[in-house]
Image (cartoon, rainbow, N blue to C red; front, side):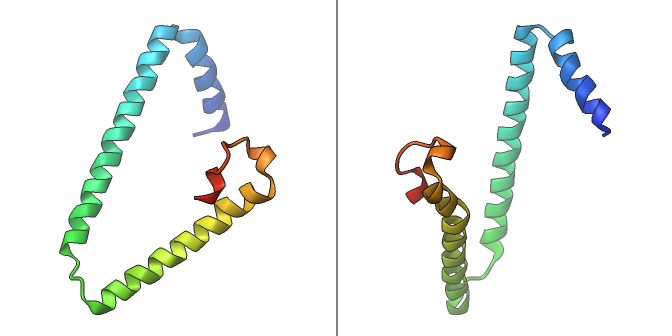
Length: 96
């Protein structure tokens, strides 16, 4: 998709659709998003059922969980902690 397509598409939305049509289109795509997200999580759940969990697997799960939480603390908590006024988030958001 060329940049001109994006400009024409966004401009055409305001010119070619009424407020009601825009609202219906937005709700439609939000519904599609939610349905596909649910399907994705069902597929992930079905995949997890097939994985045999043994003692070695549980240690890998604990390590993956620790790495994930540390990465979140660095990528979200650190910037929000260093510049809390810039993000305008509710108090306590970055410390979770």
